[in-house]
Length: 142
Length: 88
Image (cartoon, rainbow over all chains, first blue to last red; front, side):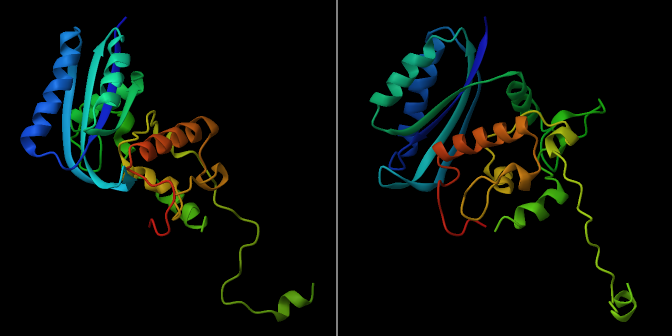
């Protein structure tokens, strides 16, 4: 049974570039060794956090997707907990809509400036546009 | 009803007509709400960072729950705050 997962890792901002690459390789190779296929890796880089975590106000974000049977998730999380360089992590099991969304995102079919697809009804084409009528209601929530 | 002729308005106020509320996800066929996309999730929270209730956002129950789950995930990975003063 092939299950697909997505993990977001936040590293401390004190790591320099070489160290982050080393850490990333450590985690991705750990997952690969267990026989999983890495679908995508995405390093967002340094970002400002919305609230301080462990007294730090920024962090290096790294997102990767992998698919396989699913036993590695427990071990990966234990590794993340032990590692002092990781301040937050989140693992999500992807359902079919999530998988399709990520694929579309990779092919540029999501967002305002999206490529035109041949097939007519594209599911997520209106994702980023945001309903104009809905905003008037959200302003009333003040 | 004689009072009606005396009151003059520049524009007759429409009492009792409300904008029809709909669920934007059902209308546009959106099935998945990305928790990594905090710019889009900002439309569903108020300036204090709280999740808007369904009667204001107009979402159906199914999608309101998904939106709430995405916002809570985004809060966990520090893309959205739990509580602030001036978010927007």
